[in-house]
Image (cartoon, rainbow, N blue to C red; front, side):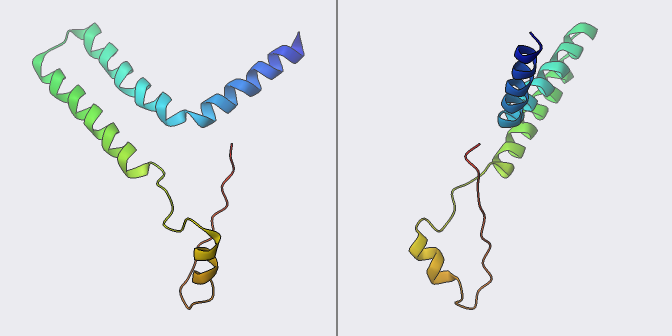
Length: 94
């Protein structure tokens, strides 16, 4: 039984690592919305909650990964040593 629990914990930490932005995007407005509903939802609360959702959306747009400008190894080789600084980034499939 302890091995199953350890495997479950590894799976959950891997899932949280992969989908942490999604978890944050859903949890923050959800928790704020629950707090606002519990204390009595007022019209200005709609503005606050809407602003929070827009802010989270803007953060996602600014921080999301984008495709690199260089797509082939020949393009990378052409830029290396041509006098321009080059950032080589190695990405893991996990």
